[in-house]
Length: 73
View 1 (spheres, one colour):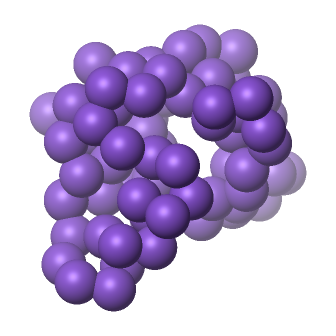
View 2 (cartoon, rainbow, N blue to C red; view 1 turned 90 degrees about the vertical axis):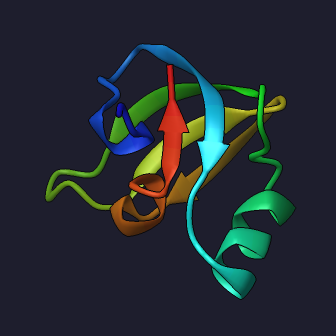
């Protein structure tokens, strides 16, 4: 299983499935990350957390713990 956390800088990934429960999953979906959406990894902070992503035409910062719950292809 590939997760968004494992996606390299400069690559685009398509969301296959969201893992997680209740409010955490809801918060990820509220940010625009849903099944089938493409996510471009712009950069990662020097210490590895957070990641800067492009989702649906806007920039988004996401913690690695949350990125680990997003299965991509």
